[in-house]
Each structure stands twice: as structure tokens, then as C-alpha cells.
Length: 114
Length: 114
Image 1 (cartoon, rainbow over the protein chains, first blue to last red):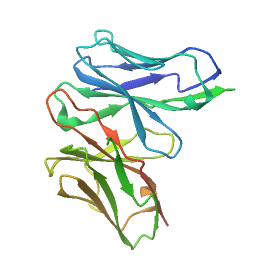
Image 2 (cartoon, chains in turn red, cyan):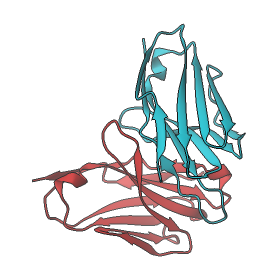
Image 3 (spheres, chains in turn green, purple):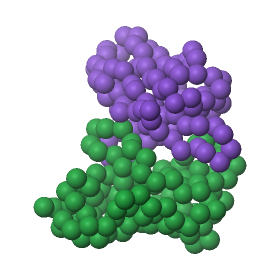
Image 4 (tube, each protein chain N blue to C red):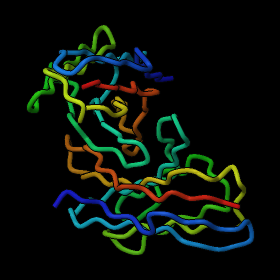
């Protein structure tokens, strides 16, 4: 059974700091991995999607890496800003796709202090 | 247009009421999803529709009844709900072309059952 874990559960940093959010999964037979951002009471915004054949994806100040063999992904945020404060969720899709079912981690709640 | 819309934004209903949640997308996606999210928890998958046919039902109680009238619309009919069904209900859609399964989420409907 695929399990997804995110560490830490919460993180508070001063503005301008570079930071790394971690995501680990127990079964390396994944199709892809998706990072989301969620503001309180809102829907999920897709940040980055990494296919199983890829090692990293970049979008602006965000960089996500994937190491399937070790069951890990990291989301790197450069030069953090107060507007980055949100909950960050990673989710994996199994290789057999299961109709597109995503398995989510519990999320990391990020607070960036001015 | 990468937008999924959901109506209403907020809904308060009694345990004997019947109401419906609506989700719409115009991205040509042929897979649509309903999720339930409780506070401080990740989304939990409820239903998946693929090409307007129900492909996954995650053992959801029959008081929740999904409907996909066409490729752009997804409804969730609610009847005889319990207070513990109060949550944020999220709709998502994704392409079904091989290799492209990025899910796009709507803003959600905040449901309160009294």
C-alpha cells in the first residue's frame, strides 16, 4: 500500500530564506508526483508535476526534484516571501494509474515572517 | 483557460434537506473528481468519472450521489447528511491523454450540516 509522508508538518522561516520541503513515499512504482499549494479555506493550486522518468521540474522560484529509487521528492523555494505562506501538499499517482487516483501526504504548513 | 469552477461557495443545510453541488470545467478534460477535505487534513477521494462514466467510488455512503451529465459538468447530490459530513468539497479535472494526468482543482464548496 502506498503511503506518503511529509516532513516537517509545520515550518516557520524569516522572509528571504531558501527552504526545502520534503515528501517521501513507500512504493517507488509511481506514475508521477504532483506538488500543490493550498491557502486556508481555498482549493489546491498545482505547482509542479514530475513524471516518473524526470528528475526535476522548475517554475520561477520553485524547484521540485524526484528520486524514485529512494522514494523521495523535495520542493525547494528560493528567496521565500510572506505570500508563500500556505500549506504545501505532495501527491503521487501509482504506476497502474488507478483511474487517476492521487495519494496525498499530510502537508507542510509554511509560515514566512516579514 | 485552466479554471475549474464550483458553486455554491458556501452551503448550510439541515439533515433533512436535499441539495446539490456543481462543478464545471471547459478545458476538454475527460476525467473529473470529487474530494472531501476536513480541516488540517489532505483531500480524500470520493468519486472519479472518466468519459462521463463512474470509474471509482471510494465506498462513499449513498447519501452522496454523483452525476456527470456531460463532459464539462459534474454534480454531487446531497440528501440526509450528518453533521460529520461538514467539510470542504473539492472538484478536480484532468486530461486523460497518455502521460498527461495533471489534476486541476476548483476553489471548493464549504458545506455545513446543521
